[in-house]
Image (cartoon, rainbow over all chains, first blue to last red; front, top):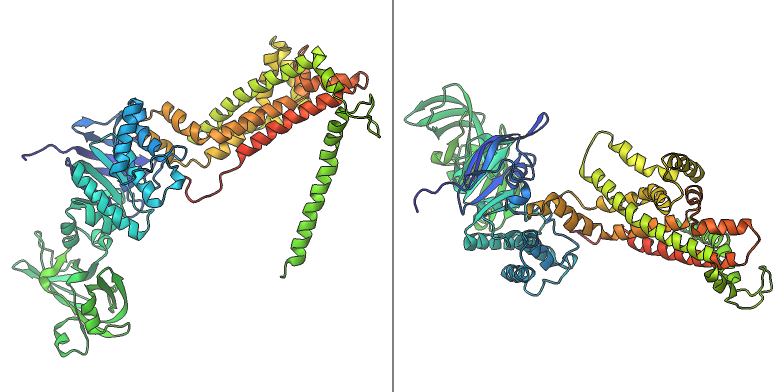
Length: 364
Length: 269
């Protein structure tokens, strides 16, 4: 396919309100057809970034280029960057079809064509026959579909989604997630998806962008961000990671030796070797932790001792929370039958360990 | 059943309140209505029998008919202009944040708080100086100053429910600022605009003092009633009263019908 120019380029993009910075000079390139998820805790600047792309806010610095064209001075209504809103923002005084027709009406499309195209999109999102319904006569999922049809009816190159599924219940969220993935595949346009839910971002996105306090912490494929978080914030935000701290004792053949409250560990050193004596942290993903009962004779090889605090179902797998003295609690993710085979209940003594190649040293 | 006596007392008080309301408000109106159909020249008991004479008489009295026509014209003019101004004021207050915003809203809200006689006198003094008194549109202008306050209040209430996203969604979907107002904000406020229209019309239709001060030779129906009363006691008064009452009640009831806030049936949009 050759090298294609990125569709959306954010260049040192900045937005401040007086003294407060919502976005602090971020750079990001988004390719045509890419599904990109921007995630982070509330107030990290992810929604502001989306609103800047849509032209609903004016940047205080930097630039946004879409298809090579600087968006500076282009008002929101001339951008064709429709957005699916967290609260949907459907027009309550219009029917479902009236809502879908709205952007076409603003563009001056003739009545007959408007009807055809709106009907086509209502069919496409599975709302055939619902065109005449008032918005308050639709269920949550149906409203969601109207909002998506309304955003896509002008056949934009970019679709912006601001936490679009957060208002839905869990069951519906998973279904809509599948449908969004299908739409993205079929349309081949760029989706920019803002969410604080890691599961949505990881399930849908080609690349995820993790933001904190107005800056980008990491950009990468979901699996890379998961396995190799760039810093403690990302590791912590991703959630299913254990952070272990220690002091660097020495480094040889790309392996650093650390000593911390939990003991002495060998950790593969990243490209820049850590300075001896410095305090560092490393990460072990929750599903890479081995867990055995403390009274199991083979458990002696596992270095960390702890007490089970509780168990939590996560779909087909289970998370075990383990209290370890001298460290924040450990999270261990295993399949349900493994956990049941061990007979883990709160209060049981366990030992934890991991293969050193699964440890990821965070850059200092 | 601890609070039973309390709720009983509340119930009783409610009933007493309603009763007093009927005695002091509804009864006089009812009396006017009843005696407007009385054949007797002077309202007295027993009733002199049913007659439409007084009702017919008012439609042949050109002073009354003119005054009624003036009132209708002024009410419609006031309703249109103060609804438009009230909407603009409410929208400005909703959309923008600026220095002196409280003062801006306060100024528009103030006229009803000023005694009507003072308002009327002040308006006459001002308008006669600039040579703009004694015309139909003078009365409209003064009624607009009064009614815009109510229009803004009603429309502001509804605009408070719109949230910040709806208008932005319109921009995002290709509507310019102006089109977003026309295609989204106005339809969203439709009910309150209708309510404002009828309420402003009712206010204007019932208003006496200002119309009397600034109207000059142009009488509105309420001014005509007073002038009639100042002359001899005329049984036509009851008939006029009945018509005015009917018009006012209809206007207010319609306005009321559209001011009802929307029940929180889940999400608004």
